[in-house]
Image 1 (cartoon, rainbow, N blue to C red):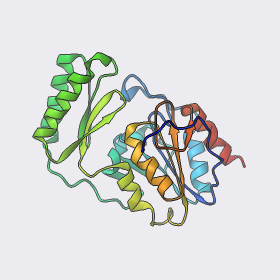
Image 2: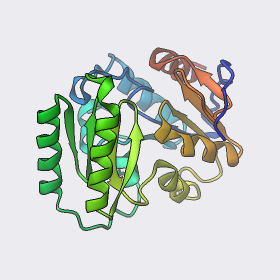
Image 3: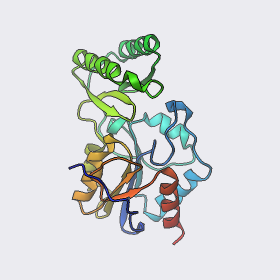
Length: 245
């Protein structure tokens, strides 16, 4: 259940006991006007690698972004990646998305609509997104378009996000991916800790707490999480502190 999460910082990580799962946009880095304009602070990859080692490999990034984009933004991070809401993975044994969609036609239709309405289309390996950050007043228009596309592509489902609507594979969710990892090496037997900022992260935050772990909401907004950090800078400081103990 989504509630008003207390503005209370979570207790310190225990790398020897915790499995850490981190969203990317809005959690590790500030959200940018365009998905390709994200700024990755110096030293972030090194902090992640240090913590990955301290956790015995039980640290993964979990994002709605394509896995290739994540890898490009953090080339020095060589740990596990979960991309496209669980439809892609690196360094993990996750099944891929199994649906038949004419992605070229889908992407072309998104670009056509975005250009006609001064919005931004984002092509994804298993779907597409329409962003209205530059025109908040176009939210209803963007939603109607996304719902129209869903009706034409029953293998996909609608995923609302921050100032965007995304079509992703049905069944590909962050929490579903994490449920598959929970009992696998190196995550098995550890307390799950999940950090995320968006509505797409809520099921994963709940999952972590149901397994006796921590759900940490990043930024403003109601959430089912029991803990909160104010933004990516606070997240990075919290993660860095865990590497210095």
